[in-house]
Image (cartoon, rainbow, N blue to C red; front, side, top):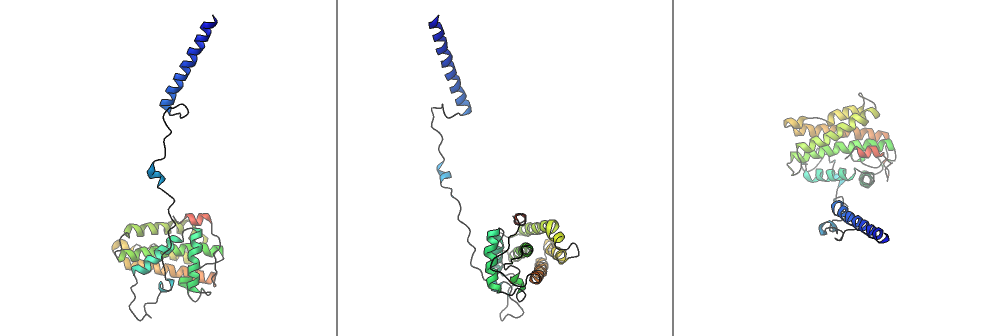
Length: 246
């Protein structure tokens, strides 16, 4: 009798082991499998964290040159200038990037924002509400850069690129800027209307370019009034504000 029980237990154990192997082969349980654990493919191991994109050499002093007072003719759509501006704005989309770029603008502007409101709109402010408005100004400038580069036929810049940047502006205008900065009769409502000019859709890129320039000038003038002096570092601005700039 005891021998039969022992034999029965051995058979049961053997069946259990066979069942586990079957489960292992179908479900991929590694602790019973005789096959080695899959290694990470070589091509995956070669993938590393990409290096930070360095801001290219820029010359903010040339960005807002007065063509009327220049000794030589100034191309308002100069790809070099607007390429620098586009790179500057893209770098400024995060709090850390903004701290870097606004410090460069502060250096170019000097201490008095009122004396140079156009570059001053990008210079650091220690007032959080001003820093948030500066995000709008930077987005306007970015859209103007896209229009200029499209007009000059620079590869990678298109009607779709302009529409994408105006889409960002439309979202910021409707969800934050107009309501926060005075409503439909405010300077920012006017700036938003100008920034969303659609002349380029009918082939009139220069009209949209000029409208964006006017929108930026309105924002820059308001920023200079609200914070007349520049600062070495910016105020903190909210995560929500940063998220509005993808």
